[in-house]
Image (cartoon, rainbow, N blue to C red; front, side):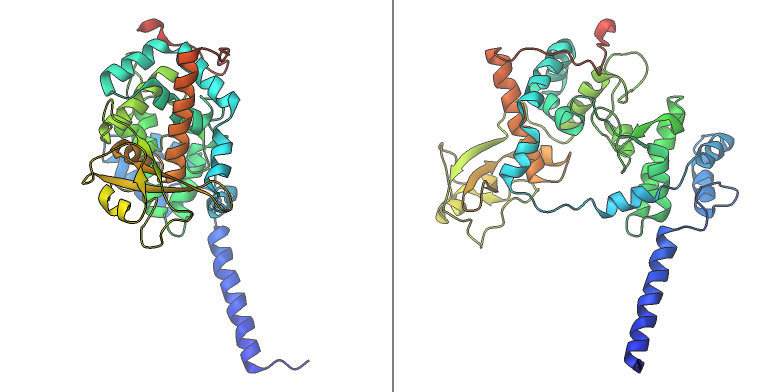
Length: 356
């Protein structure tokens, strides 16, 4: 078969593209020994100037292993778009609600103190931890050191971001005298009960049981206080609502941008002109986040998000995530009030409140 000039060039382009992709996914070296890996060596230079011993850093990075699966997981992280009813069904289960009640009861003092100090209700803190790790049961099975080193030096778009996370991780583990190779988390390097990334860990983790260690990996009390602190630092308003119900047309108007994970940005009066009105009276000049939640093929639910809804999206920039956390919190709160759900001990954690 005769191959035309254009076909030959197409074959060359495809082959070249394959080589470029292969060079990204299969590094020449499968480790990060600073004596041979220039990126690791530069990171050691940077962190050793901040009083972390060079030998410790070199040993840590020498122990990191390249993980192709981490890059593949990042590539596949964008899943198909879920409707609200599909997303909600993942997290609003009787078991997760029941376990949330048990988690609060097991650590009642810590939750009460977190609410007093940070203004965040127990059910909201519990819902975050419930959505993230099912109250500490599933915190990830990837070595954090491997994940962050792989992403820092081999992710094509976000390498710089993950390099900062790797630096923060090494800083935290050295400060807390923890073997960096011993810790596991998500494929993206999120850690512990609340799945903090290292920069969030460094900025918002608190030693809530006053034992001298900020431990989000094994200590639920520190995790409870740290989630409360995270929300407080991002502007949580105590005793204020997260959202309110609204009514609207059969389908969302196309000239309104719904579900932006931004601070409230549309006035109630403007939305009313489009047929979207709150079920309970609200100041027409107040700005809200217009939410349109698809509950099946032809039906939508409307809500107005307030400042506290925006704060939840600082934890995860998804309006569906924030809504799932909110409804899980409501269900946990209602079950606590009614005390109709049997309390099941959370066997994955130990109650470490004896020092309170």
